[in-house]
Amino acid sequence: MYEVKKSNSGYIFDLPRERIAFMFLRDGTYMMFHDEEFLCYSPKPVEVSKEELEHFEKTGEMPELVKRIKAHDFPSECVVKRLPPIDEDLKPFNPNRKCVVIFTGFRDTVIDYIERAGITYAVARLVDEPDKVCRFAGKGNYKVAAVRLKRNQPCLDREEFRKVLPKGV
Image 1 (cartoon, rainbow, N blue to C red):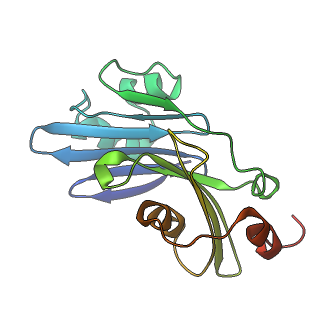
Image 2: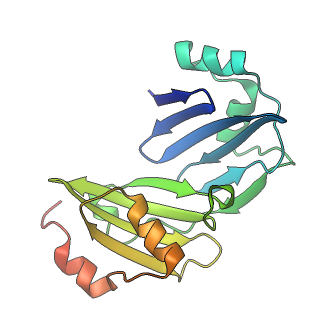
């Protein structure tokens, strides 16, 4: 079942490795979707009504647009990108996966992360340049890794990150 976050400006439907987000702007409704494999977002409004989204929230019955996107039948007006594989160091921990996209002020970025005992372990990668990576371990939100990557701030290298990962899965 999706965790739902609702505001006056939109909806977010979350699963550990999937997000479907809708943002209501003056000229229409924009969307962003990602799962483990793909990132898809609309630089132009898409055909979905607030009523359809409210119905989805209440009943779990997906609008046709969401069904198509989840089946990887992406609308032609959307930007679609294949995501890099889940980070190898985090993979044994069954990490969550989230994306931030260009119209949120970031370059398209995928973040794999886990949270253990108040510590976040996150790996952010640019979708178009997966070799550009930032590893973070510490207190804070998973987006810290994406912010550090965006700002070219210090990040852990792979060996440092592996040393601080929790032992045992």
